Length: 305
Image 1 (cartoon, rainbow, N blue to C red):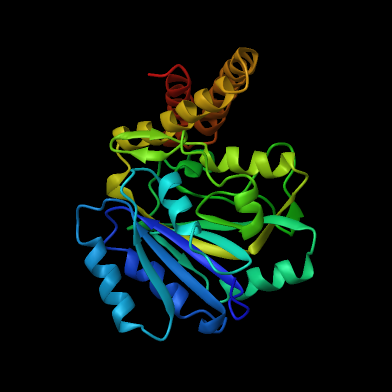
Image 2: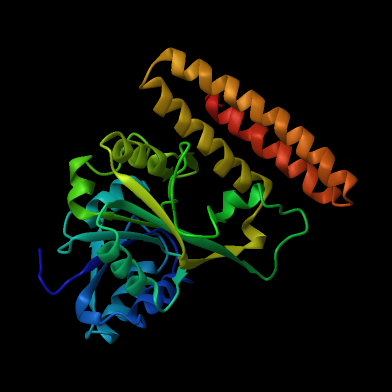
């Protein structure tokens, strides 16, 4: 560990040449002194010019602690673990390669842990930045698939199985290694297949150790969402990936846990139908079917389709 460094940021990237420089730039212009943080960019087999963009940015901003790594095993869990393996500070933050952090993002995180000695983890607000604009069919419930996250209007402790999202999460570095990092059996995106739930499983392990996980809505990032990419195939991949990850996670616990998860998903499908009817009656029919489709796709993933 370095005495000067207060926090390390890991950004895993895959084919994000158009946005990775903006993510890095949002860190470079933080209110926190550049000597107090490091940023580790992990390239996960990008086939575009992401690597070139990252290396050029690092070369042009030599006064910051930016580092570049490669991870050949495909999947966010592999890449995040690789980045975490070289961090030199007591706090470990994960950010997405298409996220833009508020200017005081890191300063707020450091201050939070200094004033909350009992905090084992921290999550913050994720605000979708739709390009060019939010589609009419998007609703609050479906927007979670594109990163929208707002757990509470004030600082609070996560309860009832809730947890931070991987694209805006912070833990103590020692705790990350105590739970052996992210479970690579839940790797995230691998080619056209998505097996999600790595963040959920990670925080469940921390909570099982008695760690208190906080949420602070003032710790914010914007998440770029290109509307043209929100095709039926894309939405299916994300939603089914949630179910696919839950299948792996709960089957590792027991068959009974898997049966309970099936019942939970059926209940959520029923709730989505009621919600769709409500949207239609309120004059927002375009929002109705996507809510139901989300739950159908998640069930398909849970059943391993």
